[in-house]
Image 1: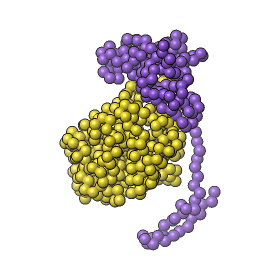
Image 2: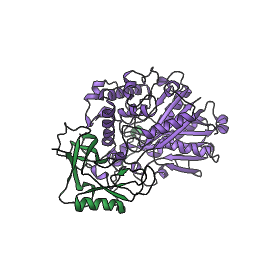
Image 3: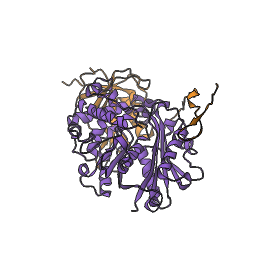
Length: 171
Length: 378
């Protein structure tokens, strides 16, 4: 790479400046960071995933003090700071709190756009679960819609053991 | 509480793919802020840098700018989060009595990495990240919830984009000054319903710096320090599923605290200009509600009635806002700088006449998990 430097008189300031920037073809350095992690799920999260994997059941936990039912479950209530010890099974059905239809693609998404995300309040829970919506007409989704979990066949003990939530066809 | 003033400010022009390195951007704004205050780097006794390791692509990212910020041989510390929170830390340092002139400087180059991957990494790695959710799609979930709960429409969001991109034409630092119509916004490419390309802020590079000083020093060095009248800050739940995304509760609390400190009872009447963190068009309306400029669900009414236009009762984002330039981490500090310029009467073509009280607002976390509200005045 050749760098040309030319000196110019800056008339306004009256002294010499090196206005060489225009002549430099600046370089970029391309890198990539790829670092493996092993994140501890913890005892509460592990039980949640084991129930998903082995029994296709969704469990939350209930704060003994304020009664909030959390899904996914957690060890300490984020509202009143109490220790949570009581497990409650919540439904695999729930109500859609909000949704979006994603129209752009990138390699992080677990499906090809267009597809939909939703936040689902499962029956018996007080918090919403972020997940995918599937088997659904993307133009016909609405807030308040009833949905149900569809479980994968080959479950590994992770959040995608629920493949997605689909509209519930209630009798 | 001792009064604390902002005695100097500096910002870069915000652009995509700036040619300056992190250090060069930081040096530029620190030098501008020092010159603005009429002091030298020797007068600074401590430095707060604002950076993020994922965005910079290196751990302990603050050290990339230690030299450029003049931090050698000084007490230096870092905030990983929005610059408004960096300024808050700087303010606390001054108020501790242990520090004098305090430099706060933020930098980010969004164009050097992959925004979607970095914002995806803000989500829980065990329960959420694998779904591919990122800043745009999670904000779309919030926008949809907000407009459905309170019956707002996409035209109202589009009007915010039109107003702010038009305001950006008066701001030489803005990245996207645009003459666009509501139809242009509505017809722009859908990213994630209801957010379209022109509802979203751009990928930006830039840096910003302010110098804080307690009254005892501020008056010695500066002709016209801008005084901090009130500050409030508050956080909500981390997981977006734990919150009602249509209710900016942590902003309500932050605003309430800031108003109390500044003795403001009727914010819409008493505040002359506001710079808020509109990363997406809908956010300006939602934050108006959180800031108590209107009641819940009435954010759309403010834009419909022209209240927040230049010349309206409360001009919001005369600079063009975050939607016209979004250097992540820097943007909240930029809001504070714009508020300072308004109070000093130095905002040139974007000046709101006779601005006595200005509000600046920064956010941290997905969908406005945390908020920091500043009230500045003469």
